[in-house]
Length: 146
Length: 433
Image (cartoon, rainbow over all chains, first blue to last red; front, side, top):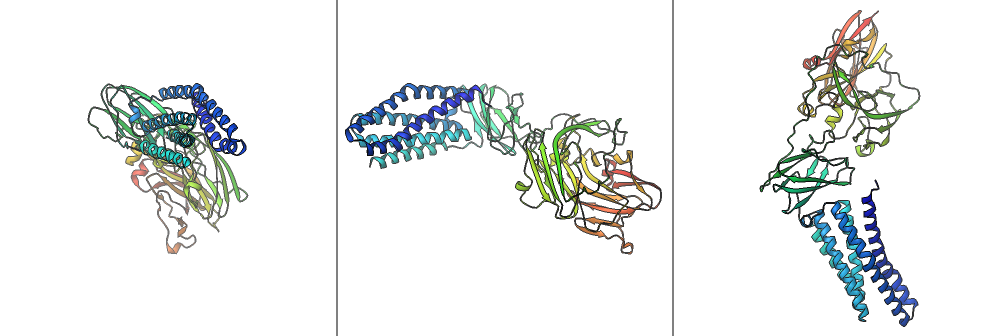
């Protein structure tokens, strides 16, 4: 049955899909293509502005939407701070929140490393962030599956 | 190098996350201290996990109820709060509120509570392990006079065996439904039916015939069709039908016999005792022509509250209120079967139980042919070799007897277990010239 709550969950899932999908598209499709097709000086500028745009989208749209809808959904499911420590559902949700924080941190560090010209570090952080996002999706699946 | 570092980072996150998320077990839950505690409760067949939860007095408790089973379940608490009926895989949140006194919980789907789907919420520092209290809900129907006259408009269930329909493929369409009907004089019960009646329709065919039975489940419970004549893994050939669902059962009657079919859904005892059984008659080759054929299906009734389904506690205790042929006590004393004098008739007998077999006996008529479980105990036409006095049919088995009534009159028949006969397992045959 489609209710207002399923609409809220839909927004949460769609927003996550856009973000993880964006990471995957940028890292796995666009980067290798741009590296082959663009000369070095143009490439750096394009990558920087892509990264910035994605960063601005993350802070301005993705984070408020995800955190807002997440808290709302948690309240609907009667999640309390105490229940987050319990084995099972609570602990899986807590793990998801921790990994989410780690991924956001890695993404921020990636932006900083890229800006500072430490491209190797930036790549490692981007890949770590991408895989971390996949872990979040895995945990979300575990929550829904019970 | 950066790629390897990134992959290492990702794998580290994965391993740490899975290890932490899966840590801890909760066979017995204790709600964490705090303003409110959430406990996840799993529903499966036929268990609630955890089945005991200890809370601090005055604590606000919330249950996250997940149906991990293959059937529909719900959870109802003794204070009246309950979840909706949950489909397999779905979940619900049950806000128990502030708990100050012990509560019990159970699945309200018929039979599941008695089968063990119970839990308890206890108050206090010590965990107290409790299993279901097993109390049957409601009161028995008033103990009836089983031999009293049935209500107006009542007629004995049709016992005559219809001839095999033409053709070798028999297509039928059934609608499983719950029906409230008079099962004994003055006793109205909700019976669970394959197609509106108890027993279910009599199926009749010859060896090699194909049956195609399309069954729609118009009840709120999962049911299935367990055909004793079927070969193959039950999960495939006796597939369950969810509420609202439809399934077509196809089978070839490969073997002759008087076969039982029934609902094989757990708890089977309850599904059968509430009426989900019937007979499949597959004629052995070269069956002699007779003047009449009847089918009698033996079973037991366990009266529950008026208009409700049978009492599961009585079923478990093997304590029937009535033992019946074709669903009604003494049905054929009220409206006897008939037979012409001096001509052979055949009675097919199937014992549906759930617990009792039949010692089928006709007073004043030795059986000159008896057939059980694919073999003739007494072959027709060989009187010097002997005759049979009872046909002993175990629960889940079936056979037939043939006999001739020599003179006009009334011939009682019964299950020769006298307590069962007094509980309704008797009737009569009127022989006329």
